[in-house]
Length: 270
Length: 244
Image (tube, rainbow over all chains, first blue to last red; front, side, top):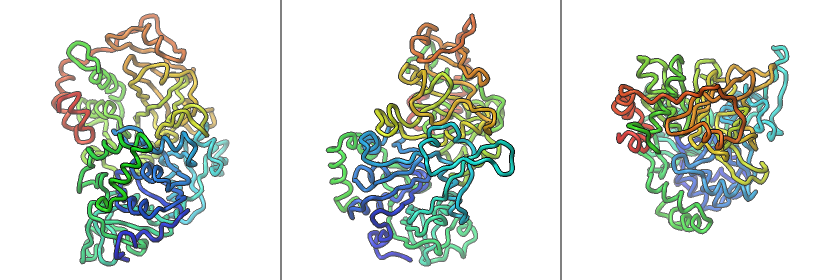
């Protein structure tokens, strides 16, 4: 359960796999993301639950992504995500545009082991128009009431960063409960953590309430400051100077390449 | 932003929005929305705790314990007010958060639809918010519909747009006629400027009032009580606008 190294923990993330990652505020495994780029992972189908920022932008810029399913990619107050924007306008990646609750619902379907989930809204939007994999049916319990069905999303691997795990591979997610849904929906889950404690999380009822059982988790790897330069809520804030530097460097392909050299391929950033 | 008199345009907008949501039970605020956030906090302060405010990204001003909860809470009918923006907004209140030009090979790509393709249908009072009021942003017809302004009769749609606020004016949206109506023009702006910078047709009364300036009590409340609350999620905005 506890991997010997960050690199070893990432073995399940193979070329071409469907990889799910959470939104920035929920714990993005950035050290792991840099390790994947160093390894040269290719053709990922990245699904963001439900949005992403630097993590998706880095993977796209580094050429690791073939397809992206997302509700939005942006650097928030640091502006548009430059590599995402460039790749989409150049037609270099395929995008399945979604909306936040549709991704949540599709993961929930996988969590429940049912083939689809219905969702309100969407009808009459171009989001729906471009999604051949979504269907509209008549509500079987209603009268002339069209509703959208979304197929379950069952990722090959879910990857996130959390504060704490124990030696048994149980992981504490606190109030970020959608991470449990991600782990339940994915075939395998890889988690990086700030700290691994000896005491079992389930021995403490306060911690157990915010824990995901190690049963769902393939590998846990220790990665202190593993969300850097993004924040890990209640632990450390975002490195705003770094994010601002990224936003400016990533505006050009050359600037992005220099960023990768400096902060990704140089081991010290790992 | 350009100031008029003793207040900033942001303060005028915050005050105007707070007036629109005073009767709500629960206002939720999404990402990158400091002005709506400040407006909701102001309305709550004036209302003695109502509306309840759920501020995305806040520890202190949100009771959600799951990323899904905002959407499920809205689906249950427990959110009365939400705010949306758009790279483009058109005269029928369709919003575009995805791209301009051809979808397959866009000219400009925006971040994406976020929760709009659901919340725009579900939340009873959606206030559209776009500071930049130009023919680039307020267009006759959007290139991509992230979420439509109105829906046919048989589509489940308890919610939709009620207003659009910009740095020049406030529009109300009439769902029956699928048109915007000019409600007020902000100080230091003219009706002619509004018309020249709007890419769609809209209705207007014979007399268009000026958006009322925030009163000294409101400004005091904003600068002393609301600013520190806002600074938790929007430190840069709070510092720039209120010196907090």
